[in-house]
Length: 318
Image 1: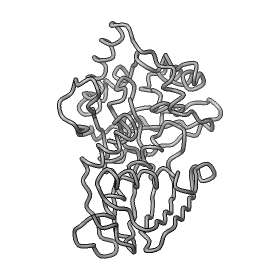
Image 2: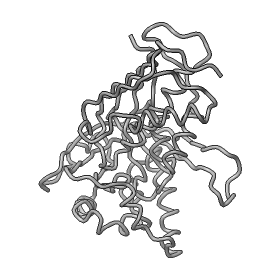
Image 3: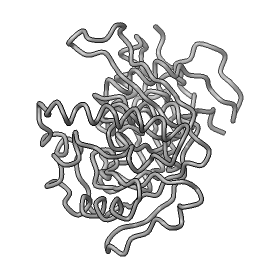
């Protein structure tokens, strides 16, 4: 296939996400109103230019190891598309890194979506016009590169997502990640408490047990079903629905301060839980109670990002 034409440029926006939401381990995700924005330009001449501002600007590589760039090349390889001669990436990051808000998923989703958009074989749209991309393909490739579908699916589709992907056991039919998008109750809102410290996802996952007691698995299954009901139909159940037995207590020693705050807010009646692999803590609430979700604990930044009901988007750069 002919390489991606030089001169094409797109703007990609991708929302942050929170995964698990308590009991929905590796399956339930929620898109949040914090955004990363990328301008990606295909160049006629060989070379790579990476510019980053905002969150993580001092920490991410400015070469081919940048996660968006690496993901774009991996996506083109999977799609059988030859990359352009060169690339320019300009990133404006609004999603905190290493905090459990899906920053790696936003970068991966951005790379997959940008690669699809730049390689479209349809007529190239006018400046500012949206560029179509295959959401199912984007969700599947992003989930596989992440290793789990919760964050990636939420960032691709927006809103609340429940996803699963086939694994080597053969337990699932099909060969592609599947995502359901239950409609959120309009009163549901979210408050995040973000610390200054980071925690790598691989560190948080390394402490998880290979097996859990049957009673814990059964309790978690029940609460996960209740979680979807609470988020879509009856938010009065949010506190009970966000109780987890599968992963949070196993990780308690990895983020003791976060878990202490979770315990404090849950004791006060709030639906608090660790966001993804942490150390950020989220509270699911309703719009009439948002202002009452507060803590005196030092070192935490309280934000009310809102829920991103739309996911990744891409348009032709001006």
